[in-house]
Length: 119
Image (cartoon, rainbow, N blue to C red):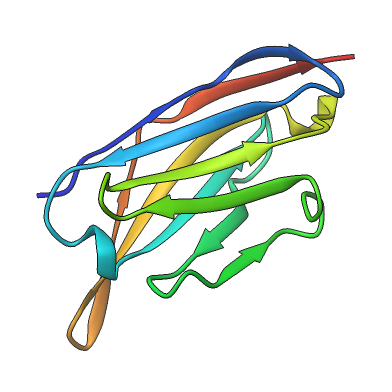
């Protein structure tokens, strides 16, 4: 069973930085694709960044150049470094682990961490 625990959220002013962490349990972290998603009030959950098992990354256009996703397989942890934060980055941020299971995959989600950016 996989469990994900996010941390690092908080209240910051525009232009400041935060680093989110997501620690995973279980033995399959290194082969999983990890992602950060966010959901603002009244909006759908959206992809922020992905990193696959080989370290390749993908970002939403809205965060390119400001956010960096990384992973530490030894610590079973994925990070999201968020710089130059804007009020529109305010949301609950969720970590997702996508685990390959032969011909299919399975998703696991964390409980979310609140990020609030004041102007």
